[in-house]
Image (cartoon, rainbow, N blue to C red; front, side, top):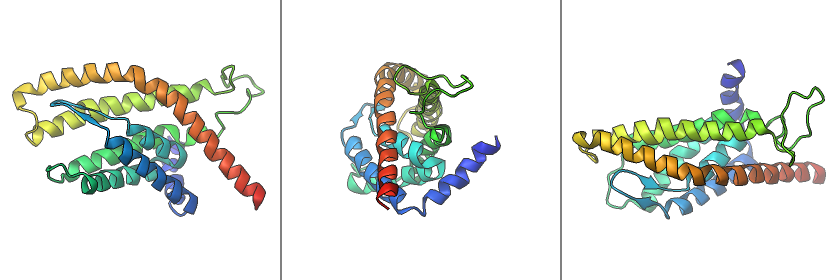
Length: 213
């Protein structure tokens, strides 16, 4: 529990790192691009912008992930308002989503997801050298986002602001559950492929920078 809360302070220190700000800015731009490809329906939307949020949270933690989520929502509204009013509640939800990814994934890669099997044999490692624990945390992070953000909070907010009639709440929940279960079959493999690759690329960049220095 102590390490969980300490990750917020450690993540906050990342905000003083120029490399963190630059990489986060790149992922925010990627998020905007992916968000522009969103498919909207009356009860839910299909988007892959979460991949950028997950990468930010994994690399820089919950604090950076939270603020990046806020910025993504504000910049996204400015770039594509689509005639809808700006609602701060949804901005906070985006921040919470980034925070969840950071809280689950950030300090969990410090031991290196690409390290060899620990000498004591306690760390489970796949044949490719990737920690099984890391993949489990990816699944946990995604499931928490689906349950807390997609299914409950966003549905409740949509009903609160009148986007969904109160009598359609149960139908909206059911539709979101079905949609997220279906999309989960696509989201998890994408995260399994992209997050380790991003982490490895970032770590190599850091190592090369230290070597050059």
